Length: 90
Image (cartoon, rainbow, N blue to C red):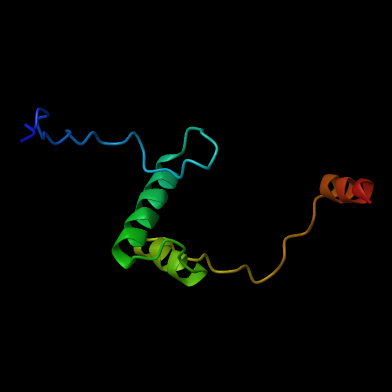
């Protein structure tokens, strides 16, 4: 009979540095960005949907307290410098 020589010890779960998709570029994220990424990951886990729809992402944003700003009643005039830049681009 074979004797089990390994001890079955559970590894201590080390908290990850950040819950960030490894396919994204590594950079320093703002506090708001990290909060959003964590909220989205939590939503994915709780819903079982790894690819949430735009509506579901909007729901996550609203749950974080984000709201759409009211639109302006009139368009702001373009600055003269901006008008020259857009004319040069053509």
